[in-house]
Length: 120
Image 1 (cartoon, rainbow, N blue to C red):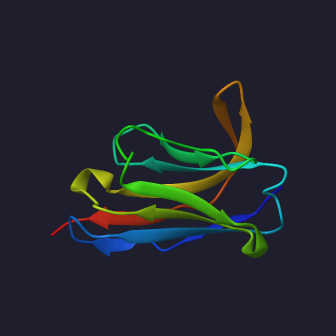
Image 2 (cartoon, helix red, strand yellow; image 1 turned 60 degrees about the horizontal axis):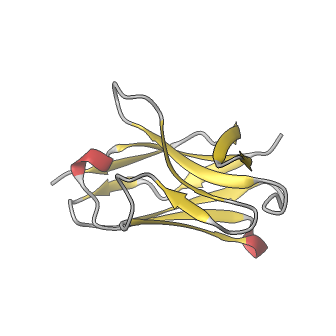
């Protein structure tokens, strides 16, 4: 079982930026794709962005051009850089490890989540 720990959430004004971090308990990036999900109150969990073993990335339409997923293999850490934040980005953000096959990301392990609130 992979342990994942998110950090970096908080309160930010509309138009601001945050960077979320996800530290993995061991070197997993050569074996697993990684992704960020989010869930707002009353909404279903949404896949925000993923990065494959090969480094290819994909984003939900709602965040494309504003969010960037990346990873640092030496630090076993995945990041989500969030710019031009909007109130509708408010949610709990979760880091996951999983598989990417046939253009579909399937999560396996989940972090505990970190709250992001965008409000003036």
